[in-house]
Image 1: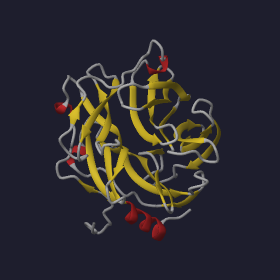
Image 2: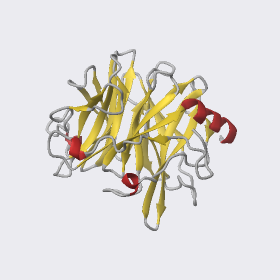
Image 3: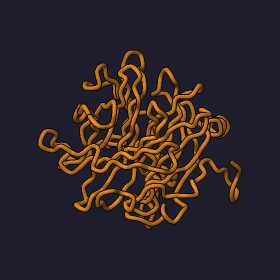
Image 4: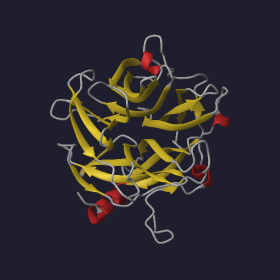
Length: 317
């Protein structure tokens, strides 16, 4: 990857973007975006897409690909629907999944936003096969979203990153649990900056954290309110492996933002919003799956080594 137009390019867009749209779906839908991602044991890439139907409510639907780029095979009906009779927090749909494989459990943890009259809250489900799901219900009360589980315990506790709305604003927090049901030890880990910064108004976790030898690599979205509306762009930060509440380094500038027409124009313009990633066979290449303008799913490729090098040279605590 080389500098383009005077700045360093961290993510290269796939030439065939967007990779999934409503037109690809086997049943009528309005839009497809904000997909969680994982690689299954056979090497297949699975995207758990947020699908907004023509009622305006969202559900989740799986798409599978041998190479993570094309040839997607989409479930013929919704994979994971809201169940408001048993889980009233899902009355107005389920949104924006993040997937983490938890080796201790031998299962995939899906953190998602459950939306109802009380607002968005963080819900959690476990699955082995993306056919059957064990719901845990709400684990973080409204107003809260943008959540993902770490893949292993920290000092004996499961750890969840999430973004509650508080009196001080929209910032990223970490919480701990012995059993995935009871949560405490809440700590603020990354704040939205004030003033004219690109991430001045809100920040939130994008895909789940990436474990590296230097620390937990966080890709997060930052929001800046402009006269024409909100801009959603991507930044990077690094956190201590043993104390993930401690930020080691945070970049001042955004590293990926809306530029292509399918990112600039859609149901919500000027949005690049990743919810999932997978790693290439080299262990360095990031396949970053992101929602483009709340309308389609797109793909970009990045490098862990490049991001860590940049944070080491230009980041601050």
